[in-house]
Image (cartoon, rainbow, N blue to C red; front, side, top):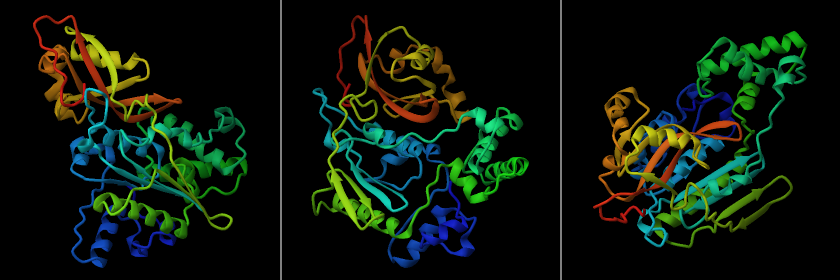
Length: 376
């Protein structure tokens, strides 16, 4: 949902001054097609969660250039949801959806290749990312000392006071302008200088300044790895490249190890259920289930929507399934995989996620045990 801003022009060579305010995806697609004949790019200006899961399954490779941990985690979980395992919990090669991820932070950057089920996924190495700096609420409310304090006060406290029940959208320019305006008032009240619109964006979205040269190096590394996967011309990166240009030039490749207990790229959490449990009770169970803690869950089975929280039309269409036993909705198969999308709580933060669950029913008479092709 990003739109072009003036600050993008020093490092994004596809954008021009007259493009400010336009969707990045649409302008970038147009410029690339103008430069490279024969290339056909279809841009999408929407939130990544707005697309159906199967939309991402149409691509051979997913290349990431996202600016937040939450967005990376979501796409990672989507790609891993296509992964299937055999009866020995070995990944089926034809179901692996390769990902190439890159990111920069000033003079530093990384490029990595993720082969779900083979190499560590994003969630396996989530510990690589330091926790975001948080300010005590008492400081924000009573004794702000910096411009960032004023911005976070407007973002975390003032917004909820004025817009009770309305979620703040960092990609909505009107929301961001409101926070900027309130932060300015707060700063003037306490005599604190330095509140700007660009700083407001940086604090709220945790944006770190980017440098054109670093972007060029990391994007080239990502493009090379994508070419390797598509053509098979060479072995791919194994599996995490870091670059540091702060003092000279330093690059290093580290081979991280897959987490065998990963909730995202592993075979899936095994849940044993009674065959009489309804879909509604199953959804309620997910909220308190250890490791999952999923709320507002939507459930799919073999591409069929069993229950969808949104959009409203799908919620209405699938609502009648809530009172039906999950065993019946899954075709009375003893063991199979279901995919659940919802909101997970982690480190006091709620994020959208997708989880693969292996459901096994117990106490069923007269039904054949079927280990399905989806790796249950």
